[in-house]
Amino acid sequence: TYILSYSYTEVCSAHPTSGSPYFWAAMLSPPKDAPFASWTTGWFNLLGQHAPLSSYFHLNFGCATFISTACTLGTSFIPNETPMIGIYAAMLVMQGLINTFSMHLLKYLNNISVWWHAMDTSVVVIAILAATPTHQSAKFVLVTFLDGTGINSVGWSQRASPAYVAIIGILMDQYTLTDFNASAHVS
Image (tube, rainbow, N blue to C red):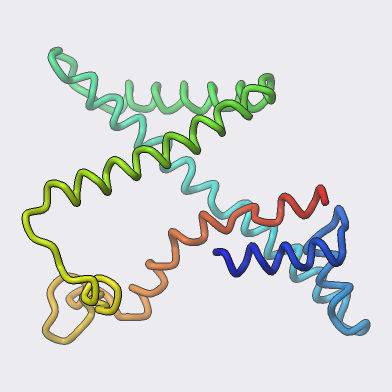
């Protein structure tokens, strides 16, 4: 992640532009390949912007499921499809209204989100370290790689190939790479 951000920083400082990746692809490639490089970069950027949308909708539905389940605590409420879809729709409408009418509010929500993620990650890591009775050595933690795809391994070895495990492993990284080039658009 840092290597990618450093490369964007270098290119952004050397060639500031509002077009960023498309313009860079055209400018840094040979003149005869410039249109294709720019077109390909644009399409990959478009796909990269739209592909996570299905995941965002899935996350909203998961959140609606958690809210419905939380409503069962201490009540006689039994969650079914109707209230879950209603909560899901309310969340989508609320997000749409915030994005449409309250752009200045997004700055504060983003700052809260950054601190929330930093703090809850720290709390979880500290809690796990404090509550675990035994620990592996630093060498095991930093050097050993166990993905469960070996012949005698349990877990993924029964269901997936090492290539599939690698692809699933980089799936979470793609969320951190989304919109890395946003700062370059305003350079």
